[in-house]
Amino acid sequence: MARATKRRAHPLAPAARVTLSLDYTSPGRIADQFLLSEALVKGIRGPFHSGKSSACVMFVMFVAQRQVVQKDGRRHARIAVIRNTYAELKTTTIKTWHEWIPQTLGKWTWSAPPTHHIRDAKLDLEVIFVSLDREPDVRKLLGMDLTAAWINEAREVPKAILDGLTARVGRYPPVRLGGCVGGQIAMDTNSPNMGHWWQILAEQDASTEKGAELITSTRDAERDLMARGLLKPGQRLFEFFSQPSGLSPDAENQANTPPDYYARISAGKSPEWIKVYVHNEYGFIQEGRAVYPEFRRALHVREFELDPRLPLTIGLDFGLTPAASIGQRTYRGIQRVRWELVSANAGAKQFAEALKGFLNSRCAEFSIESITGDPAGDARSQADSEETCFKILRNAGLTQVRPASTNDFTLRREAHAQAMNRLIDGEPGYQVSRYDCPMLLRGMAGEYRYKRIATAAGADIYQAQPEKNEVSHICEADQYRMLGAGEGRVVLRGEFGQRRIRPPYSEM
Image (cartoon, rainbow, N blue to C red; front, side, top):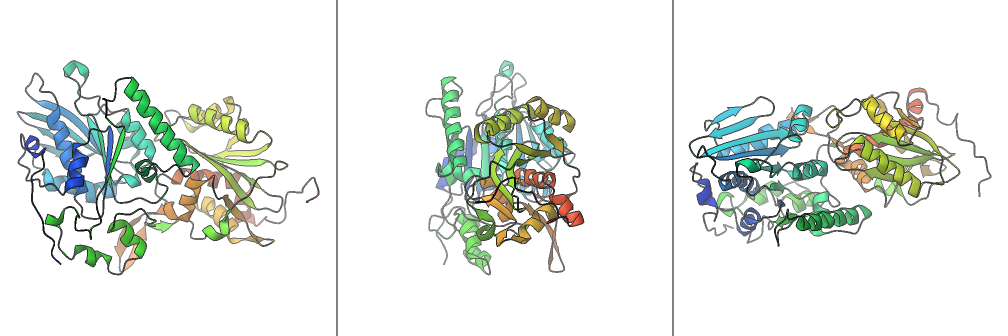
């Protein structure tokens, strides 16, 4: 059934026309509210084809046009556009940008990172496109002075990147040249999974320990920024907007959407897919191919306490979101993960202090058998070599820390998989705490995945290595824990059952 549409120019559109002739029509009321929001970080969530990415392109141009006219008669702005991978940046984000702002306008360069520099008599705008799978791009991003930023498909971007960006926007132009006006971060996304940082912040979901901590820290930051005069009275730190279902009479971007569009894209799709991409509801969509198809929530997720008479095994992954998994190998050989510790945008020293504090407060009665870390480190976020990270951890009192004997991904994956596949006296050989490891559970359930890169002869082709995303760091930390606990030997030499831990006590 055809839907009635009403074309209306966006209330901010005339500003964009100062330099460009942009025939922009508002997708709808929610997109208007998003664009007019003065929150430091604002996000819009919607179904496919709802006009949210185009609204973010307009955000870039509106921010540029708000800047103070400088002595050369131009408004100056530098804005970063972020996407999770270069392939998606090139085929989706940049493509959308050029639908509105052609390459022929100003100077376009594909060199890393791709940059569009628009300079005329009234405007000097530099738009820098950054993908998170290119290490030099990320290092450059976190060192930039920016006017504003746009995070495209934000559900694919670690919150650590968002946290880092909040310290970079509003810094260009510098104060001596008139300062920045409207330094904001705009985000758009399809609905993420339940438990994602977007869902927690947007819905103020404090039902989990992670959610409660995230909401509390956000409120504390908002109060601090308000007290320091960095937020205006009534201005929000975060503000989230949700568009209606694509099948709703109030659906947005109807003027540019064929009447049968959502019916066509729903054909042959699962109810969960329709829930997320058509109705704009939170759900669980497994994009790509799961690294651990062996994992079964009903089998491997348990409630348990660790035995203080047995030592802990700990795994570490460094980088922008350093992570630790803390578990134990029972005397029967069952691998149990009791706690996770995931930091956002923390350096090695800060993370070492957090881990030491956690162990002192939650694990004081336990001895430690092994602390095993990524032998290669993560060049994206470590200013020094990985050896410096290990030294910092040892200086913090974590003297047992050692690099893993190998960084071979196949061995790391198989160390987990073979434990998941074995039963010991009727119990699974790998178990994760039901309530205290939310990020690890998300990863094991499918968010730690190989990204699909192409389809050939009717078959999907995937990347050889897992995608770097919000959950990959804790999953890889647990891989190193498993290696340190001897599971690599099990894979290579089949030693399971020959070197069981002998309990120095009688089982009750």
